[in-house]
Image (tube, rainbow, N blue to C red; front, side, top):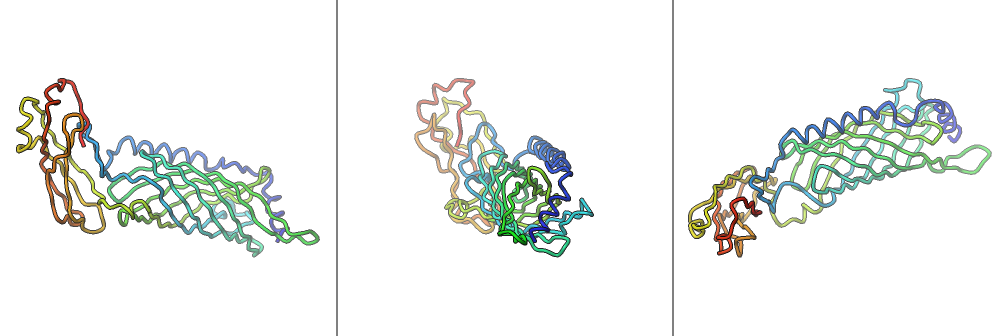
Length: 315
């Protein structure tokens, strides 16, 4: 089997092995997704500088497992590798904004043209760009770089030997949110395994994955989409008026995979209110159901000094 690996690496020694065939595809994917992020409006919009404490954007760590398959013969008919199948475990950091930082570990079985089975173990880190297209559907493109090895290859006449490789990869992924904490995804991309002097595998890839967000599983608050906010000008001299007459309204929708119990909508302007004002209370909000709530406020004396050009933060 060791001679198979050496032969494959030698056969590819003179070929390009720095991902030149698919780097333009990766750049195009990143540019396209960035254009989508800039053009398509986000699911949750902040109007009049309203800050939402229960927005639909998740933070924390997302864990995923995927089944992958590589098909190098789609690019090179004379390659010495028939196909590869394996599994990838990935952890994704979800910062505020479109960028994701990812790390992954994987194990693959590689079938050579000679009928030999090689095992590959590797790990990589990468950066991704995500775009939420709807409350349930999102796109992500990502690039990875890392190291791995084909361990314990028996070479006749010498001791067992492992072969170190570097890996490069890109991925374009579409995911569908099943619930607030789980998603299923389909993806395609390119993978490369190589040494500094020769290329081993250049292959298109496809796969399916399942993702969970542990933070969302532990959340006590519901996953709610603030769909529309409508506010009217506030007149400081009528500050007590807004305790009984609405100064605006908000429309929310339940994005959970089931009903949410005991829904409460509060309004708060920290600069001009001592505490939050309860605006509406609903015992049960069904899956997908929308609720429109009038907004009320109990302003204190500080609002009398409100400048005409002020833009306070609303919660």
